Length: 297
Image (cartoon, one colour):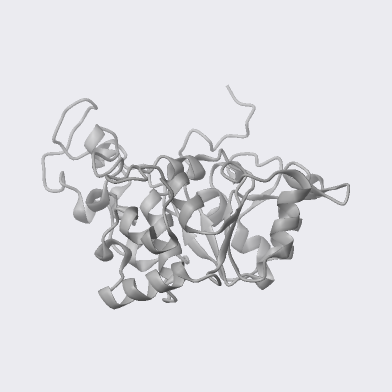
């Protein structure tokens, strides 16, 4: 089933409240999506595990199309995405270079060691183009730049530990303002909702770390259903607060308790695990598995 651009939000399965859109805004968005001149989306992947793209692709909707890859390729002019696009090679690069009006979505950190060669995104005119070179050439002309995931926003796991490829976050590398959809990985609705806001012509209010305030205003702990319960002293005990076992919910900002994952089925704490603080700039942190030099015991 092919989905028209006008049906984008209808089939998203996301409420206007989730997106922060009024009914008036929804009408504008429908008009924007229906127009031939709607902005295109260019999505590049740098140093990461591609988990943000997997999160996006795995979004579950109640109505057809049920997968976001079908939705985005049918409803948004997705010019480039390594995992979702149809064209390849020089044809794909030519398509990117021909676009004048686009939103640039960046997933993954930027390696700066070895002249950036640990991560190349394509070959152009017979020359391998690094992730850093590609985003540096595309960012100045983008309508907006969206960083998705911890690696792009803050460096994340690739920049932790010994960091042998000298990973930088995208904002630090570009020196430009970006909208940071933090998380490891971020919720698919956070990515879709932010893109929808921009397509509707709305501004996206940001916190001091560049994260949308509509998503990252409250701590996980403040809305956690286990808040106020007896604190657990061992894992595997249901319905007890995990704060004493290292839960980072009190200092982590995200709407996971309200939005949940997998079509509202569950989230980390509901599954018996602590919040690991994956939306915060210091994730994974000095006390994490990734904090060593890479060669320890």
